[in-house]
Length: 506
Ligand code: ADP
Ligand code: ZN
Image (cartoon, rainbow, N blue to C red; front, top):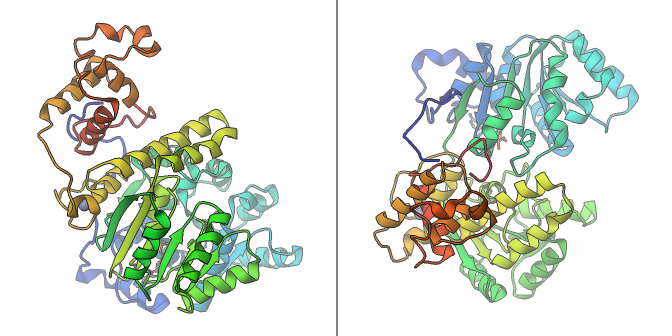
């Protein structure tokens, strides 16, 4: 649709980043220091915590590593009762609970790894009020006996971590997450806080609708990672390019992501043969070996970890100096998460992706057995990836645009497209035609259709809608389809057009 400036959103969005902490707010800081030993809140943490403490539904979007967990952990300690934390991964639950226990906080988890006896004892402790945080997987929460038990507990609020798993438009959909609202409704009128590190505007609205928390206060932190350098290179003579790149970063810590286990093994071997210290990591390895490889990487015994995307969740190594995508990732969400593991300490972080269209076709084939809707959603994510990789626009601007944030600088100075800009020309005339085509087709069609109309390609859609009669039809036939795709994409990025959030692809 045509962007007519900022409309009144039906959802409240508070963009308050890097809030300056005022003096009178010290009481909360005392608690922060007392319980966690930190002297300062980071970014949005304090405003978020105050919002939860005042009993409002809260939605937090914060990039990985920014400190989401504290947003519900501190209120859990301050509020009366037990906070329920819904989290999708049993391994991460255990990590978090161990960390909290180390702070002397009575946090526990309830999942399928516990014995009957352990569960009985845990439930008793929750009912007496001894436990402050209880981590549960949605599968466990779904069990009737657990709902019955929680109805007897004084619950302070419910936190939903990794909330993007609720949305089928996102990259990490978990069907059982969609039932969360029904489950918590059985506990009474609960305060809810949802948190995620990735949500496009469409996914964000989907999450809020699904949780029936449209009225919630939304806190979005900036996704800009200033110290990361983004680069995309064609996937040609990739092994040679990779070795050359590694030589330039010799002795530094880095992650190389590959799509398959086989590729992980192959590349790890190649790198070792070339004199680097690398170890593989994927779900097919013996658990002991996998753990050892991960620990060696964290302890700097090995410099480089070659991994599938199974690696990295919950890993907080500050000095990862480069993240290479040897294969094209499945979505920009995934790409942003994975590159986000570089430069956590604020120092150098180089993000290099090798791109080939062939990789996209392979990824598309993986999806062929999925249900139609899921397949189509996955395809849209792949198309976004394609645009990102092929576009001449600043990578940072594109990534931030994808997550609903406007990056205003013309040149970020820290991506390949800004450092080595491609030749530019005045495209006003083409942008006008793209807008015209959008208007004349009543703002209801996708990019492919618009390109067909502009170029005068008569496919069945053009015929059935009679779009060959439009004044704009065929006016752009001197340029090819890729040219027009790029024009429309850039018109979106520069916000003369916008995507229709309710209709995918439009
Ligand atoms: P996220 O879940 O957003 O990826 P975490 O909650 O795991 O991030 O926090 C990342 C790291 O930042 C953790 O090591 C955490 O202890 C630390 N951290 C969080 N908040 C603060 C703070 N206010 N001051 C210092 N360190 C913090
Ligand atoms: Zn840039």
